[in-house]
Amino acid sequence: MSAIEFHNVGRKFGAYEAIADVSLAVRDKEFIAIVGPSGCGKTTLMRMVAGLEFPTEGRVTVNGRVVRAPGPDRAVVFQQFALLPWRTVRENIGFGLTCTGTAASEKRKLVDHYIKMMHLDGHADSYPHQLSGGMQQRVALARSYVIDPDVLLMDEPFGALDAQTRTVMQEELVRLARDNPRTVLFITHSVEEAVYLADRIVVMGKKPGCIREIIDVSDVRTSEAWQELGIDEVMDLPSFVHLRTRVWRLLRSQMDDE
Amino acid sequence: MTDNVAGGGDAAGMNIRRYLPQRRTLISLAGLVIVLCLWAVVTMGLKLVSPVRFPSPLDTWSAARQLIFTGYGGGLLWEQVWHSSRLVLLGFAVAASSGVALGIIMGISRRAQLFINPTFLLLRPIPPLAWIPLAILWFGLGDTSKIFVIWYAAFVPCVLNTLAGIRTVDKTLIAAARVHGASPGRVLREVQLPGALPMVFTGLRLSLQACWTTLVAAELVGAFFGIGRVLVIAGQDIYPGMILVAMLCVAALGAGMTKVLTVIEQRLLAWRFA
Ligand SMILES: Nc1ncnc2c1ncn2[C@@H]1O[C@H](COP(=O)(O)OP(=O)(O)OP(=O)(O)O)[C@@H](O)[C@H]1O
Ligand SMILES: [Mg+2]
Image (cartoon, rainbow over all chains, first blue to last red; front, side, top):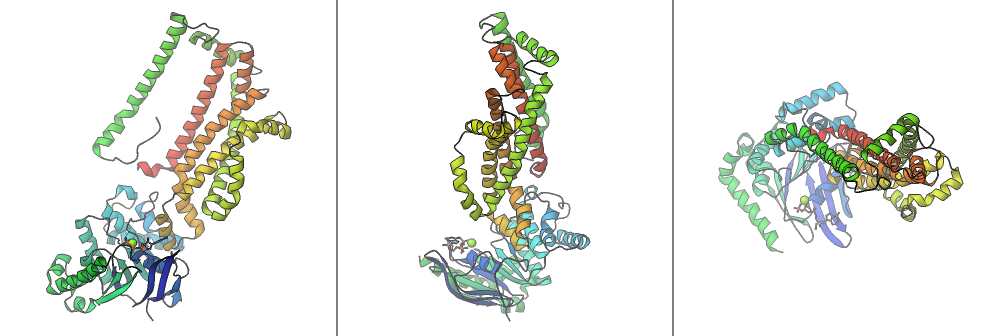
């Protein structure tokens, strides 16, 4: 059984057809990157997995169950971080644990663990507005990781970060995915990011939103042990360059269609 | 000045904040002193205004002493002040709790909003003072009718601002809470209410202002005690010093209560200034 399944999913907003006939099976612990032109329905697709949006056609299942509401088994990392401004870093990271009623001592231990892992030591009692963008996004990542979700949904999580911070975060994400693998849906506008991070890349087209092609990266990644390398080293590899060009061409052809 | 500027934690900003409070107070005091001096010069020095039209600082001072020590309009200063303040506080408390509660209900439930809105839109344009005759008919000339009118005046801004506050909370924050396991109740407590708080306090401030405006007007129409009563009697006696004292009382009480509200708000929103 696949972790996430889209069965002929369609979504209309009034008369406007945003998504039509999307079918996709995401394997357990698989890292999927979704790329596509703006407005092709990437966010909508992800919100349907999160339970924040519902298909008008077909169905979306997670671990075999149809998605009916949001739940902590499907945590989302948002582009704009979406941290509670009136809660400290520690409280924000522990938010999901508080919701599920985790015992205080257990919560403290887990939160401390993720504060360390995300290099947030010394900022545990700061408020989000006192942190840099990269730090805020690490808090958001920790908040999602700490509740140990089956599925992690990320909507352009590094889109609001500067290029350097972004690189650091990408490497951190690869490290997390290697040490603590999970099923991930990762939306991005960056082809490099998609090729570097994903096992499979879903390229979408629009009018209406649909899947154009799925590119498998996992074989190359494992055979060349990308997860042991830094992003700049990987980006120099011929296999990486080749994949990047291929995805880029596909994406361009979707944009040219307009 | 109470409006604090959020953010700006750099060294220069800190410096400005460290020496500004004293300077601000100094400038504000200077402004007051100049107004007082002008007042004294115009009324006592140049005698440009007749004391029957506008009292001098000395007239006002003696009127204040009379009100404090011998009483006027049926009571001593503190009795009159207490009487009016009590009504304002009661009316405000009832209006704030019921108004914020209704605002929250309308904010989180479209159905409730649709249900309540027509009634609300119908009643809203009626000025609070237009309720006085009906209030007197229902509750008599006593305090209850005044509390009712104050409640009505203060209720509307509370509802509207709370509603707007809840509605304008960032949808992504709500989604983030839900996908991390928050129940609707927790979303309300942890996200919607804290997010609406600044607007709720805007509503409370407007509401408090409305309380004083309405109370004084209601006491002018009919009261046995209170600052409005002092104003009426002083007007009948053609006693400008006392009129001004009563007006200054309202100003001081209104400002004082608003200050308390602001302090509470800053406590609750302390994270902004961390
Ligand atoms: N609540 C809504 N009401 C009406 N239309 C909507 C709604 N949500 C999304 N849409 C429309 O559906 C389409 C897909 O939107 P979506 O946000 O999923 O695109 P996206 O691929 O995430 O785009 P981007 O890359 O710019 O984030 C868009 O044309 C958008 O206008
Ligand atoms: Mg999007």
